[in-house]
Amino acid sequence: LFLAGKSEGTPKLQANSAAHTKEMKFRGRVLALCVFYKVWEATAFITESSQPHDTALASTRNAVFSRPQTRPGISDPMNRDLPRRSYGAGPGAIAPIGIDQMWDTSSAVTAQGGSLRTWSFATPAIDRVLVMMRTDGRPLNADIELWQGPDNTPQKMRVYVEDGMERMFSAVIDTPGGENSIAIRNTATLEFPLAAQLEADLGNDGLGVISQGMFDMIVGRIVQGGAVYTKPFAPDVASVLVSMSTEGRPLNARVELLQGPNNVKQIIDLYTENGLERPFTCIFPAPGSGNVVRIVNTATLEFPLIASVEPYTMKDPRDQMINGGFFILG
Image 1 (cartoon, one colour):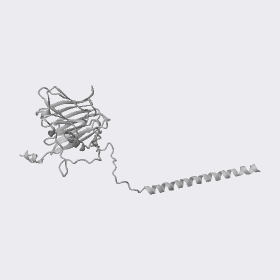
Image 2 (tube, helix red, strand yellow; image 1 turned 135 degrees about the vertical axis):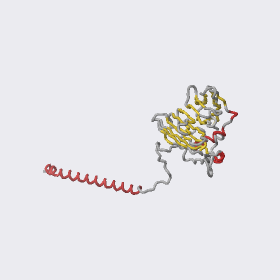
Image 3 (tube, one colour; image 1 turned 180 degrees about the vertical axis):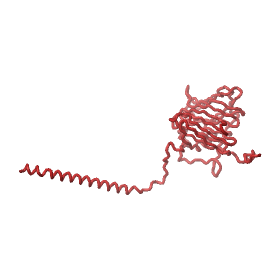
Image 4 (cartoon, one colour; image 1 turned 90 degrees about the vertical axis):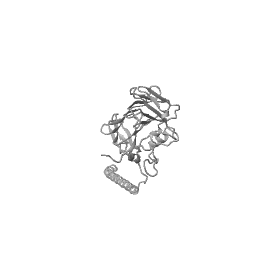
């Protein structure tokens, strides 16, 4: 009887146990749902902090150059949290120093057609140099190379200027590390000499002031490999600041200054081994009107660059009035 009674009651006990287990699971899920609802209700309507957050993607139009800190004691001018200086006309504006003010005829070195001139640094503390070249009004053709050690050329460019007097060439070359040399070769014939001058960045005067003003103005955009970026300028712009960099990859680009349809006034073919460590910065004089800067990323699609093209100095309206810039005589 005992065995018979146990066999008859076992299915009832198992059914009760299964029902109890299902009820406990249901109550646990309901309790978890209530807790989740309370937590969501407490945090769903909390206002976010008023502090702005940067959510820009890397492929958006605006991008900020990231230049490595190489000089101790000088803050990174590319940090967007730092206040930017105001250039141009207006209260509190700072007028950029023109490249013409940096040219010193007494220290210029003449390079005859086909000759090579080199400048070696006496101290490794020089982080960047300003390279300037001009002619007496004739065309300018030259190759500029940065040498670092034997058989190592991390940066080089080929320059063409239609009129080296009206449009003086000027570019800032970063020289981190030691054992750096600048080589300038006049690729023109003997009848077309050029004058070259280098200015070191000492951080407190001269190029230091100019380069700091340049870097404060840099805000660029992404130019994909094989893409073309053009930007026209108003007639009152006296010079244009062009800057290019990458995220650490090689930089291959062609920069042109045009005045009118297919009228090229200045060309720079650039190669940089590391566009983050050695970005490129130059100033294009823009006399007259109808000036357009065109940047071509000659690399493949895998190597984008960040380009910035902005006005650097403005023309004096009084000079335009004297030269008849406000009226066209018939």
